[in-house]
Amino acid sequence: MVEYEDFYAPDEHWDAGFEAGRSIVLSRLGPYLRVYARPARYVPRFWHRVHELPVYDWTIDPEPLRLGAFCRIGARLQIRFQPTLGYARAHLEALSELDRQIRENHAALLHDLVEQEMRWMETDAGWLESGCAGTERAIEQGVHELLALRSIQSRCRCQIEAQFDTEALADAAATNPWSRHRTVYEALRRRSHAEEAELARERAEQALAEQRAKLKREEELLEIKCHEEAIRRQQLQREIERLRAELEAEETKRNAERASEARQGEEQIRHMAQLRKLEMESDLQDRYRRAAGMDEMEEHLKREIELLAMERQRLMLEDEIREVRLAKARGWVINAEKRFPLGERENDASHVFPPESSED
Image (cartoon, rainbow, N blue to C red):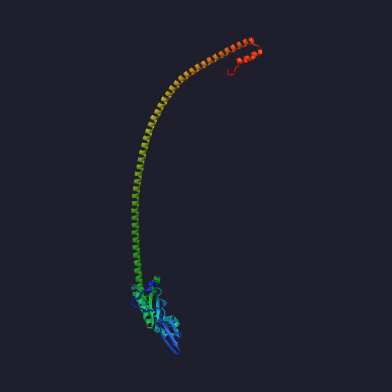
């Protein structure tokens, strides 16, 4: 199928001359009829009829050409056409459907043109080598000329496609040795052999390329593995060095800790010895103080005892003095009783000798 961009590509040999907005004006006033192209500054009138002449698309698929049962050659025409003013004047009765009228009147002519241009392909095998481009251009040029002679502007694109059946080709070459397609048979067979040889060569080259690619991939994988192994060895060496450094640092740390602990133990022993010495000195001093305190206490007790003895003697003296006083008082009372009467004596005695207090 023709590509879209190819269809609209400019033709190197043919200028269709399409016009946008092409129109025809029918001016009918009574028995008079005038036909002319619509001018740029057209002023419509009620007796005017305007008919557009646009650009139409037309696709034709002619009957395929068959070279026996082994080959089928199909063609497709993609035509873009626009009726001219002259064609419209010549077909005023079909102005409303010019595109349908053109298709119906020219379809058979175009089919015949395609068949005539493709007929030589039955006996000439040159197209198998050179391709169908020349035939396609010839058909396009014929379509342009055929429609131009009938006052129709056009641009045509033709595509020819051949389909082959290799099994039917072998049968046809064996059963029809005098066929008019004999030349094409032989050319197709040579072409088939060449294609098979080329395919075998391509397969061999592809197998060789795949083998080389496989070897290259294996070499690359081996190189990658060697590189990865080297990287792993380097990483392992770095890990060993790191662990060794950590062990050395740990050993150094432990030695320092042991030395520090030894120093701390020595300091602690000295400190304990010093504390023991201080405790012993303090204990001795305490014993000395207690001994001195016992002596002082003993002296104090002695003084207390002496004081108590003196106090006791004082109390005994006071008791003796009191007894003496009482004895003297009794003597006075007795003497007073003798000297004074009883009532008076009591009053006088209470005056002279007051009663003893509980404190005495």
